[in-house]
Length: 237
Image (cartoon, rainbow, N blue to C red; front, side, top):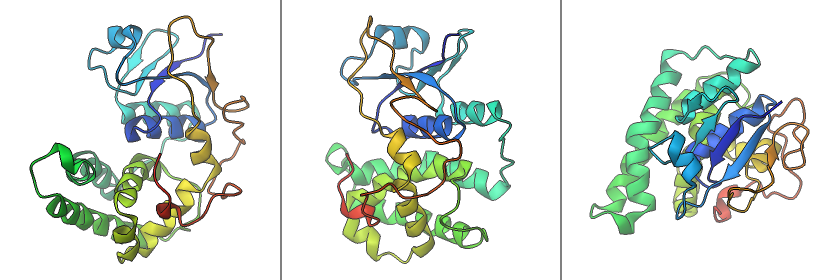
């Protein structure tokens, strides 16, 4: 039986959350790492937007929006989460306003605007996220939710841009959740390193029970041995 194909780029937060959702639901795919400087013609042919992730099902259906890939993955295991309006709003804000400010803060050399103004605007959004986590009434170290997977890859980028700044913010719940997230086996498995795919390469199978992930049936936030919990003191690869 042929596997779905996922075109991905390791460091892209959109591709990251697609991989995380697939792993969290115990699904296997053929993973094709993309070089952004030489995007595969096979990927561009099925998704002219030419950005990762691009997900191709065995029936040739193409899903090229990361949240849609996440929803597909959760649906396969009957794990569809009913997000309340606040979670939906947080994800929407993450993908619009927060991403806008994040790019202009993280990649300040690419934009003429004041990076600090964008950092402060993004911080205000993180404060909303902190309030949300504080009100959830769930263990900060519990199993990652759909909302965690959708948002935390972007928060990770913000935190790593200036770890000293992020660490001194009054965001205790968010900082703990993020530290547990990036120190988890799930995250380590999602961040597997592959050479860029080329036509004719042997398939790299990614997912439960395979060499590149070794995913346990239930994946939570159990820290990976050897990872420092103060993750934001380490550079983001």
